[in-house]
Image 1 (cartoon, rainbow, N blue to C red):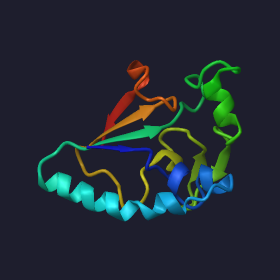
Image 2 (image 1 turned 90 degrees about the vertical axis):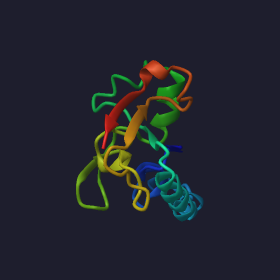
Image 3 (image 1 turned 60 degrees about the vertical axis):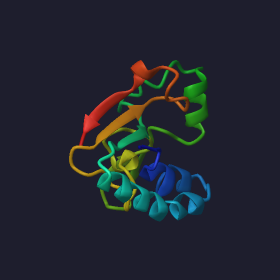
Length: 134
């Protein structure tokens, strides 16, 4: 089972979408149903993979300044520093910050794989995907 983009910047109060005025209620509404599906998948012994979007702190993996990927996300202020709701320092769409952590209610269990994608079309260039194990 693959869980895609259920990260704080997209679905939590204080995340990128919320700060940009995007209604996050539809995202928050699906957390509980996804949680139930994940529990069933775990009981059945299925492998669960989380797919998240995030860039390196220096934005070196975001593409050239005029690339569609950079232009699209610049409107949402990716890379900007902010104070996360949990009090930590965050940066919009930067990996290993509160912003790219999975939303409460769907946190990965020990041994679950997470992959970082760099573009909206995650499977076009799978060599862009890096992984980490929780």
